[in-house]
Amino acid sequence: MRTQIIEHPLVAHKLTLLRDRNTPSPVFRQLVDELVTLLAYEATRDVAVREIDVVTPVAPTKGLSLAYPRPILVPILRAGLGMLEGMSKLLPTAEIGFLGMKRDETTLEAHTYANRLPDDLSGRQCYVVDPMLATGHTLIDAVNYLLERGARDVTCVCLLAAPEGLRNLEEAVGDRADVTIVSAALDERLNENGYIVPGLGDAGDRLYGIV
Ligand code: URA
Image 1 (spheres, rainbow, N blue to C red):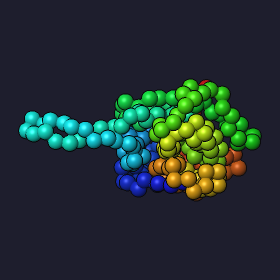
Image 2: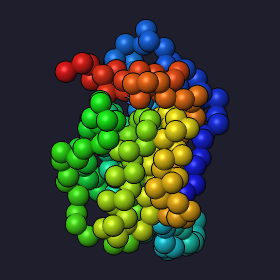
Image 3: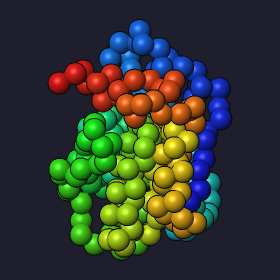
Image 4: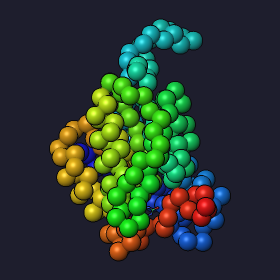
């Protein structure tokens, strides 16, 4: 597994605004969208491309185009939905599949309640979006599910990661080269309720309210 923490002043600036408990929901959503687009740029470094011919107004030349099969974006409901738009801006031709996963607040284990993905993911590059890599249980289940169905590789794009979650993921997926974690920051730890410290609070609630 590869882990990439994106160090960039714009990423840090937007993340700081997201952390601020006084940032209201509409601004929070807008910032998540902008931040994800920056992360998506790094997360798609290995997206498959093929060489094509192109004719400029001056001369024919070679260029690159996204290869087939198309990549798949997988937002983890609910909070991952807030990251979908930013990701699909950079990969507008990607297909979109959904995984609904909720963590049990007592055991902190993930439970899958919705799945709208093709059974066969052979050769597909999957980009999972989920803002908070806390215990890692949700992403472990999502990554295993996608790889079992034949995904070529899985890149998880997160806003924040906790060391405990990264360790759990590392243990679960081992040294597989086809799993990458991209995050805007690596925070200090988890608290007793499984929240990332200092974190930004409950990402779903801050995006969509307490419903
Ligand atoms: N999920 C969140 O929304 N926030 C955390 O800090 C941990 C898990």
